[in-house]
Image (cartoon, rainbow, N blue to C red; front, side, top):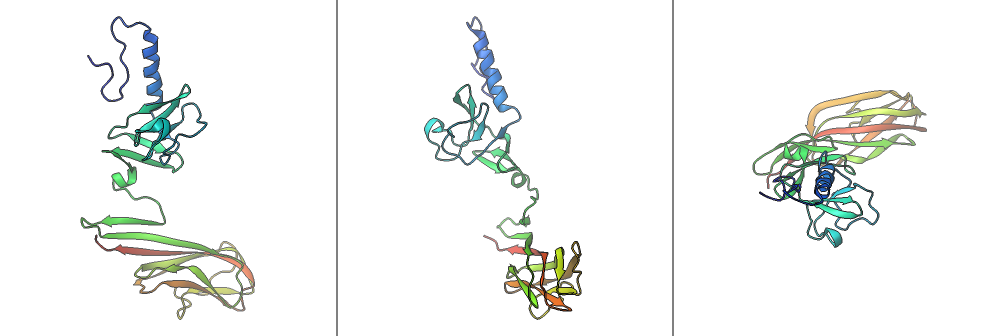
Length: 247
């Protein structure tokens, strides 16, 4: 009979063993560290100086000190010492500082959304991946244009070269002064994403187009109507598709 369980390596209480409570308590300690796994971080290679009781970490590559040789495993601080929990394929862990779930595949911790081919909520995500690495993605770029002033305001964010744009949406965050309305577009097409838009706080517009491909980095331009901008702020979002070439 083995001394430990197969998967979690919990120590068995053996026949005629003295101090059986020690082995029993050790198994409980390991179970407490393993069940409903949630770690604080997965990027540390050096043990933190003052860990809280029960703190757990996925040990990063190049581990040193008490974690030496533990890369990829779970380090548990328990009763004043580090305990190694050898990771197994299929383990699922919540990483607190990333607000993300990762799963153990072979010797690598992989984000669950990637492992299962799920869509993540992010500024840019690939929704299709070919066998040779080509991708089709969806993305959004956002900026708040504050302190509007003058006849027009140009964004610092840009429609990327080779993007296929679906539209640009806007929200008037604080009331615009000076102008009676405004247009949203690009240089040479000032109303491309909407004209005579509202200056009152809370006014919104979804400026849907074509879609249309762009062949140069292109900023968004807000143009004042009925007078120059003298104040206010507008939040803009560029909605577009991305194409990634194969490897």
